[in-house]
Length: 509
Image (tube, rainbow, N blue to C red; front, side, top):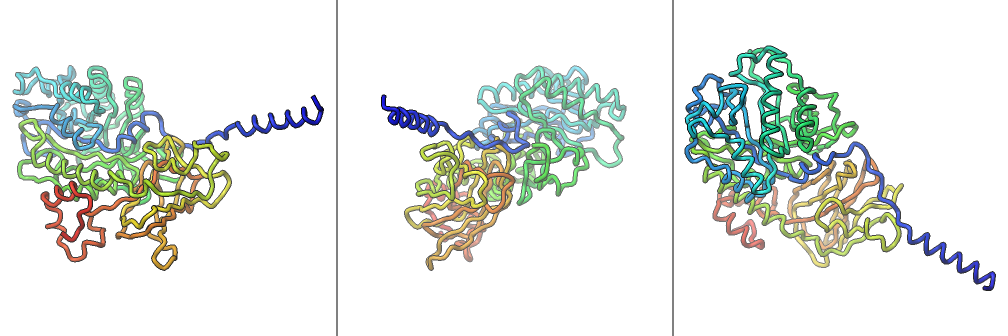
């Protein structure tokens, strides 16, 4: 072969081979979630079931001295509980296996203050078992709350004895009922009660040993943290990053819990707990929050990089009350009406840059319209201009922005904003945001445009976007289209049912 042709052949082969090599994904930025934390975050919402002797005594914090025979839920049906959760879009349920009064919803071998001393099923019942079976059959994750504070147990206050007692009960719960996905505990204790030192590190080690797939919730983690209030509201800036060394169960600064820590060395995402009713246990004279109120909480919890833990207490018959079910159904319909259609889904996209070679779809900007966090847009490295331009192909009205990061690669974004091209041909800023994390939902007065620009202003590393969506919320009061309409009248169940079956309905009806 001609030497020149041979040289050209080798050069061409090298170039083809070189071009065929793909650029690897960007490095994750630490800390990152464990597999269990990732599964927990993806579930988005969980139902809490506060249930026990308090349900029958109209109490919140039981004394621990109530006769266990009062516990007699004659129509108990945990399958109904789980079905209510599943039908409403909740993928996880957590039960108060033991609350502060010390009454156990399973037949513990370490105390007689349990269902085995109750009237219910002649002392042979086991609420934990029934819920575990129902959850498994429905494919719903199960969590258990075992209160550290025990107002019945006589050894409470005796450090060694009570820690052994607590670990004995925890072992029962984690070895008898199959897979447990979350263990929930706190540092609650009334004023003037006995001092007690809990061996939290020993507890955490045992839990992870017995149920390696479970996440542990407490004020300070280790796997998921309390948001710092019982209203279900996270900080408008909310990091999954956290320093566990800066937190202590029972005395963590609520502001630190709400916002997390951009310099945190630990991945400890926040969980927002709130009750659908004024109390945590069922009380006959209490009514549930409205579906609109739950939607507002959803924006401020799930929409701020947290998991929403909504307490729905079973009543004294052992069922979820009809009025609670109705609100949950309306809440589900509201979410479906708002978020079922991404109004940007057919947009023409242009990115400021894209990582890798032309034709490498792994980091393509169109990945932001794919469900799930494992596909994402990645810009070219070592740049500071990070933006996505969207041509919606027609003018669209919207008032909600959804953004998600691929959190398995770390939480990165520190500040961003959204702009629209107005009628005068000028770019107008619509909303500013700070953290994103697993999911950020931002509301603003309704705007209309064909052209959008999503800009990332600051990031811990090259930003990555796994999903971006815009939506129209016809229900929330932030919508400027309400004008003088009465929210009370507009938010009636009848209007909600009409609206959720007709996405074009407006706030002026």
